[in-house]
Image 1 (tube, each protein chain N blue to C red):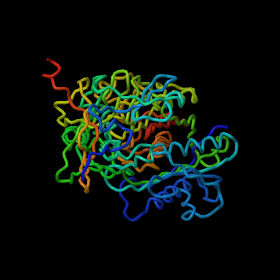
Image 2 (image 1 turned 180 degrees about the horizontal axis):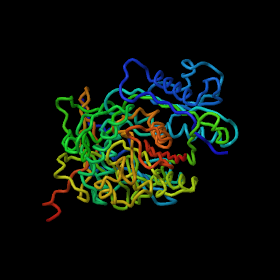
Image 3 (image 1 turned 90 degrees about the vertical axis):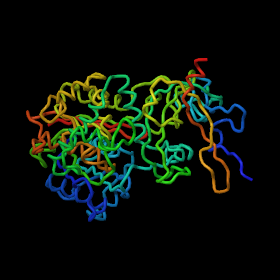
Image 4 (image 1 turned 180 degrees about the vertical axis):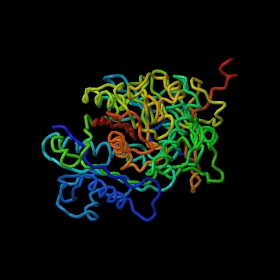
Length: 380
Length: 147
């Protein structure tokens, strides 16, 4: 049984002092129900998650206590992707017909401060100042630039594009264009990455209504079909965040594994994809993830990005809603934001940030600590 | 009376005239990891032994931490006295790539592939006067290797 997305809802990302994270999730859920033309009582099951705004199951207090099985999902930056994959399996198995996937969050300002013990690490690792995701991202792109000839200018161009796209998206947090020069000259955070090259923890909520493909037209004129939803964790030897040591022999990371499996499941290849949302926790991540997801060879990004290929009007538009850089990263909602954006694109409803040419296939990718990746392929 | 204490037990030999990082090596597949673990993350064997890791290696990748981390960071610094610090992975031949702080923090003086030594020094001083010892990676003195 194939799976369709028949309703989407979002609470604008950024800072909303008047609403809790949970209330932002409820707002998104109501929007998704309205979009599908159904009531909360029609939903048979739900998967949802938030990293710092409590159990997603508490949405029942906002939306109504209907007795449905609601499973809380906690899987770092891949929380949304994991919820969607779980819902996909629940429908594919025939167990349920109609369900909801929801994610929301509300993070404090500043970088995340993870607890070493939660990841099986000694306290010393945090005490001496190694427990920072930003360091990993910087060290990974530093090595990548050294090996594949990616320049600092390209890092700046990725952020400039994100803010340009964010300015076109009414739900984005950062809606002011920032020039590549401003990006490059902003405060250095972790060499070679500057402040404007990093996304910030933020707030927001996203909900999706999913159903059996053969019933999709009951709820939605233009359903979008989930051709694949794959989650992978790291294998031994992949270069990952929060690792006091790394193997001498490097192997492909979970992004490569998830991407390959997703393409195989969908029966399509990278060249078939019309629009992609790739994890851009920082500028370097978008660059590396283009190749890790199979969209180009390592090093080709330098020329592709300079030529404008990844812009909304380009041959391979990436992060058309501004990505994490312009939307911030409310962990529970972030991966689902990518899916929301692709559904808009495939329905032709993305307004000013709509990709031209009537896109048919969309791709989403998240990556998170301590080395997990989720990929979806959507088709209208 | 104040004393020198390691930041964590089992991380490196201490006290010792020639301290070394302690890793574990799998007796089934041969891979090493740091810090020492009770099983092998490559092949899941529990047949592992602790061994001293080499003290000199080459820098695999690096960054400089330019802002003061939040807790659980625990130093004697304040936001006013915080100084940026280098972080990198040192590839120890025949062993593993170990992550650590660099003694160098000037990006102009750090390059991938440079040789570095594992050194041990005071990380912070506790209220009771105890010196907490940790490990750092220090660029090899060019004059020393050239000799």
